[in-house]
Length: 389
Image 1 (cartoon, helix red, strand yellow):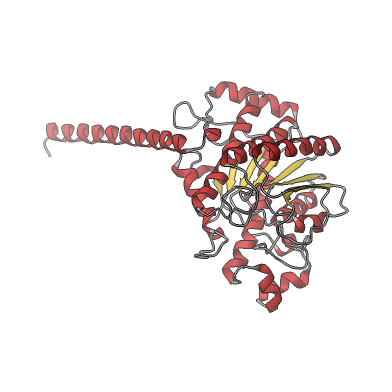
Image 2: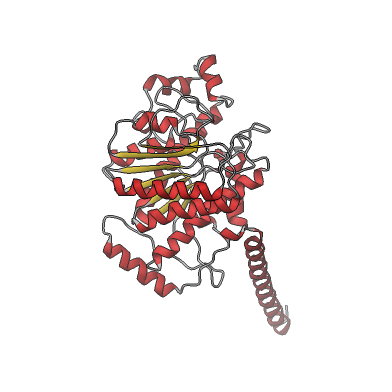
């Protein structure tokens, strides 16, 4: 190729690259704006902090609280926004492809995709978990039950109690979800916050599973963190519409784990063993009453107990359009619920782990929006903490 044509060709390639890059930036910016506009008002919160002020705040809080490591908040490639200053735990195998089953396991994949599509997170914000070890699992569940799960030897009654089809894919997903909550707990102690885009299987008991819950991932994670001497005291704040009976059964009598369950009284499960703090709600309760009751009990819980980590079982099923719930919270109300829990963690300078737990809305998109809103609430709280709030 003649020298002049070669030079012109190089310039053209360079120009095309610049144009493509500009178009990509514009598309991403538009996607982000579209996503912000599609969110409920309560979720439209954005940060405009400089990197230097965030970095200074991060170093300051790290010096103030040497028992917990906090990651520096980082600026996004999108001007004027902050990407997540904590990690999200996810694996494609969380989705069991259950089809029309009332348990929408596809929600994990849909939440993951929405976080990426909306520019809330990028691929570097996600970590893939290793499965929990059997040793980890058997700190919570008895060996006979674990053996039955792994050898496909559950009785017909035990299978019916699970209410979810048994398969090797199910077992793999449950061990992964437990590993995900362990990893989320470890990351929260580093970054201050984390989320397992799965987990929250609070009906699983030491000797059996029930209500779509095979292994109690949160309990497994707490016991692992205690075994590793990372923590002594933990709190479980469970806002799923259903009582956390497995959590209560596992930690009953354990003064080092405070369990709070706010749930609909006249709903599953029939037998509700006592949590440290049970909040039994009447049918049909709405946003204002729910939030006032939750605020009152969170205040008392944090007055009575000083946790070193919080596991937030952030069920989406108090939503008024949930198929398995009987409360009347709006998406706005659920966003305020999340913000309230996050605010208590922030003000008490306590690391917090999100697990998604239940959510069975008639439109799966509503469940996904609620779960994404919980991640946004954590992002908001992390931003306040980074800014010294």
